[in-house]
Amino acid sequence: MTTKTIFSQILEGEIPCNEVYSDEYCLAFRDIEPQAPVHILIIPRKPIASLIEAEEKDTDLLGHLLLVAAKVAKQEHLSSWRTIINTGSEAGQTVFHLHLHLLGGRSLQWPPG
Ligand code: DGP
Image (tube, rainbow, N blue to C red; front, top):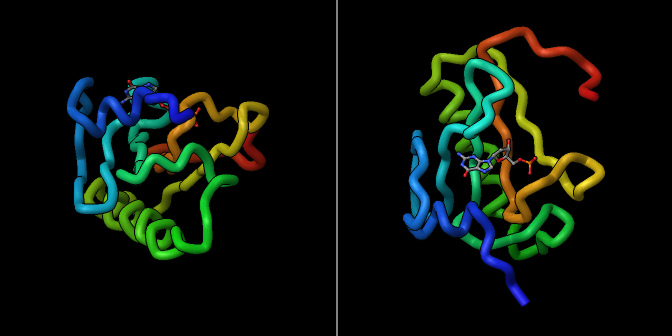
């Protein structure tokens, strides 16, 4: 059974978002709980729950998400940024629709918590 996530609802226009980029394969919008001055989520239109569920046939799509992250980062005038994919609840994943976090606009610590 596929459960409809909040991100599917955003993709379907049932819940509003602050969109920054959209194309045939993905949507990018500002995170509702920003952890940095720039905090954007990039999500595929295809409802892949988590990176662990991605398949070989998703190779081009996954590459596309990274390139969109770089495009959006440049659009936001960032010269350095971090991209993160949380996979599984112990890693902090709370929404089970694959998403890439793009964080920037401040100095970021390493390692993350
Ligand atoms: P993660 O913890 O990796 O699953 O990240 C989920 C992110 O999604 C978290 O940073 C908060 C964000 N988020 C949750 N619900 C909404 C929403 O309704 N709108 C937006 N823009 N972001 C959301």
